[in-house]
Image (cartoon, one colour):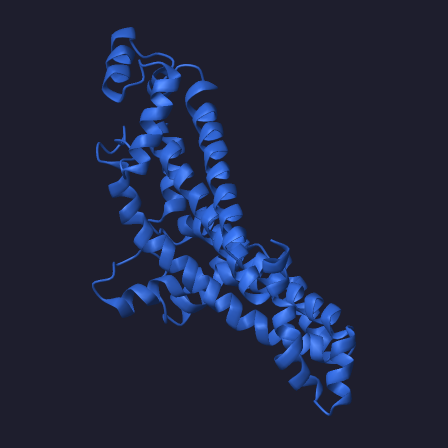
Length: 314
């Protein structure tokens, strides 16, 4: 297990190194002069020179890269050109929205997908299986922003159960949870559909194994066999999808955050791009890449915990 963990840590470090180089090159080298890009083509030369000196953009690219990486390791993500506040402060303010929203949506997706996937696998080829697969197909095909607007029309404007948008903060936890409920449902529906289909396929593949037929021959019902034997062995592809979904929900909810006017990380990146705030874009994208790589690393550890064969191979 220690050797497996060491290999995954080395892979994580190399992935972060490559990602940081790519992000730095795309944002600070490929556009040419970052200061000129941020100020626009008609900016005066002395204004461009002043911005370069203020943000340290007049230093050589290798030195800027080392300064940027060293600062991020120490928790310093730079100063926002637009907001004139540290990027870490902006990230902290937005993370209290995006992280609970991602966890809320992922929890709803799991609560919907696992019973649906188990039911479809246990009733393979029957009416329940066809109904679940049809519903998941609709969930995948349905645009989540359109579904979000339907939720607003139904539950916010017509029945007035949940707020239509905005976020009141966590001073009142119940109000904050209500504000995130409709966005979480809109995000969870397509993810639950994908997860249910993956779980069904993994369970069906597992149910064809010899040890499952042996368990059935010993007198276990189909449901008992699935829960006791098949589910754990079918979890590896499910964990892969869960890790990818959490990363998407954390970083990819830009449209939903704009529909509900949520001050999250996705909306912060969108605003920073439109405002040409490269410092914010660079640091927040790197932070999200780190989150994705970290989730992948934790998923690999979950693989090893579920399947001892991975530890032995390592």
